Length: 122
Image 1 (spheres, helix red, strand yellow):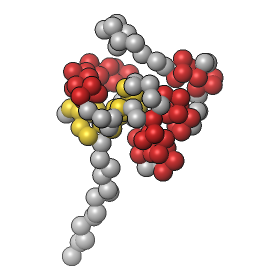
Image 2: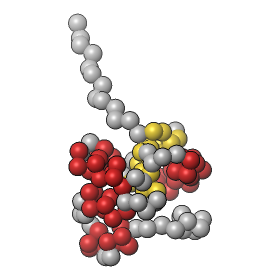
Image 3: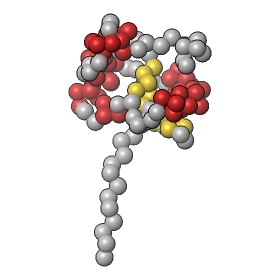
């Protein structure tokens, strides 16, 4: 879809050379490979922000990262990117690298949300 709109897209197999090499690659490895590229990363693995080594690799890579819902279907992912492409481009070109979530409701700065505490019953 993005290619059809004139954007250049780099897939994991392209970054690693083969699909086999790309499968299961550690996040620290692929983030190291894209560091300094100026690329915008569309990703579904928000756990990167929870793992200290991966978070450090993200910060060192200095790329904009946009998280899509991990459980979304291909059609839903396409819908989200098409719907919010203007915001994705705007955020990626007008600010220092940050992390964003793409949802049905828009593009929002990524903030880890603690589990809601359960109310105690009386």
